[in-house]
Length: 360
Ligand SMILES: *Cc1c(COP(=O)(O)O)cnc(C)c1O
Figure (tube, rainbow, N blue to C red):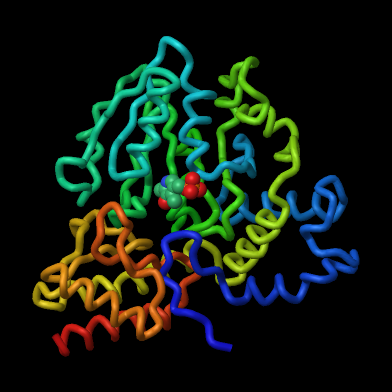
């Protein structure tokens, strides 16, 4: 069977082993005579899936006991609203670092709920870089500081995370969670839509320090209240059972590869192949991100002119590469090389970039 060379930004490639296991278990999950999506979310089988998924994530990311793991719906985008609804108490201000489109959206949603300010921004530098830690104008009494650890559209990533802050650090990790080791205790809350690095769309992971749960106001709608979801172990209403099951399979796969330390090594190797193709091209390919802010997950570049970019994308598509066009808001090219994208697919793309350059 021929699998596509899938460089989609999200939903994105899933590990082949995960798809094969899901296929095998499809008609009869663990002798139940049912598919996972036919199980009651109150059944013993599903509760085991829910618990096991949490335990795997906790182990892989080394999550301390004073954090709660939630599986929610509404994507990372709903978190843009839920975070200020739960954590931005009236009278206080939230600080946001703008490093791309998604952090702008998070900031705009916060403004609808309460007071928010821009603590740093690389917008004037076309989002080519991440502000340094001393460029962040953080208020001591801010409700929290929000960052986006990987900027999916511009192809930049935070390589050193502000640590020991006086306020909780909140991070959108939708496009780089599980790609490298983390120090969870540096964060108050981490969130990620699953469809880039964790599984299929439909489930959003939230990792929240238990102290922050106390901020959720009693008058919040139940579905938007972190405390409600924590108390009910993410089973307040019908969860996205199939997505949670796939998340479990992806985490099992990550563990079988040796966990985040091994994944990071592999990710550095994959990204290195594409950045080498850019850096060794005598300017034929131009990387968007500044070198010290480059993302290991989304490699963004352009060619000399629009015609050449178009012809590169056209030929790449004919050769079987999927998803290489840049985000509709910025154009150019983008290769998303999340955990599940195999090394040999990235090697094939690097070879294609080199041969296209020689031919043009
Ligand atoms: C994709 C993405 C989002 C949006 O995720 P949805 O699940 O579609 O809401 C938010 N933030 C980042 C960093 C992303 O990559």
